[in-house]
Length: 151
Image (cartoon, rainbow, N blue to C red):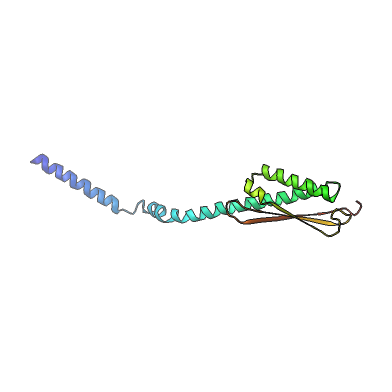
């Protein structure tokens, strides 16, 4: 019987030690952080990921507008400029990682202060728009060049 009471005392001691361990405050801040704070971070991470995607596409649109306009002003005429600009925009869009759907939605709009566009002392503005595949948001950017008066 003596061995049985020792065993019971040992079990009671272990149970009371376990309950004392559970009732201590040590480590509770970690549990609260895991249970409360981490689920609050999930929407923040989702927002930042979405924002990064949109910002990336806006930067791509700015690059397309700038490089398309450079190709335009480096050409010999209005017609040749638009053709070369469209080709440059298409190639650059592919290299920058736009999807086929985004490339199909690309639109270019030229605004000129003089007619024809490619005339001395004029300004040419190219606006690029396309629809973001992930968010279905329209992304738009513009670039502007000044044509030399000594052309």
